Length: 430
Image (tube, rainbow, N blue to C red):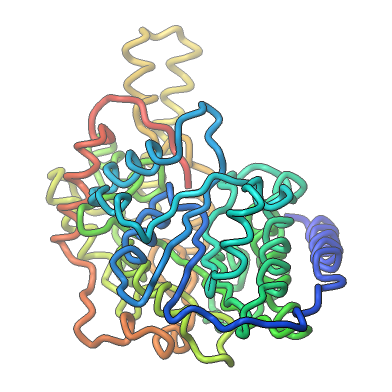
């Protein structure tokens, strides 16, 4: 990205952050006691991490009630049906939806009372002690203005917490992303602190996440709000192997039998399974007041070679340097283009198209460049985790399991079940 464009993006990001951090509301003068246990509002529970958060909250005996807020479906499907299907897809027992403590709500944060009835909104406002804001628009090509509704939703949550009648201001656990450091120097270990906007500039998704972080930081400075920002790294499949086939790792794995190779790397990955990530996020809601940023990655990184070797063995293909794997992928893309121009048979063209990684070539090129100087495998950034480990008994547990070949077998079994490792069409997403 050109320096001038970066500067313009940063200016836009700062202006938007300033616009959403003006005139915070005051706390009420008359306050009421908090409930005897935690009452948690969690957003975005139909996605992968959201499903595991809902499961963890439902099984946590210190949580009296869980309000799961999700946007209405475009196809008019009921939230209960959508949530049940999402849980089953992630190999999670959907009977948790029958618990009295679990309350499913459809609404929009940007609407008055979030689109809920006045009675329901007031019930939530007078009882919620913690907010886990997990919902976000996932679109890696949309410009920043397209994300303004979700940014506005963050400010609405801040105002909701500050105007709570409870003695203690509800704590917001904001689920951010490592995307905010995607352009950070590769030789740098990123601290658990606010980051330079230049690290996030260049895409609407990371820019919006950075702005939301600034809303939290500014609210923490100017108001009694005590938020915690959780920058989530790469989350891998849970105990049931559930890992969305639309993400870059499954897409890379799907290429192995077709390219007849798989990339190797001598460095580590900090991937963290969904169930462990969800447990750590629940821990973070009780972090010390001086902790406002944590990095959610595995504190015991696993060698990439352990994972890659298990995948290569499964498909009986050799491990090759990342650059060679990418070269084979690009050669396949070139052959596919030539086949199109030469009027090759539909079957021949279809065989090439079935390699989903072809759609992510620009992403893999970028990672290959970063991999030349990066500290972690495949071009990923190394981050500090000290505050996260201090704030989470889950992450601090010396018995916390590392990723290994058993996990890989679970992922592959899941991907076979959902059709990724067949010729069925599955679209690619980072």
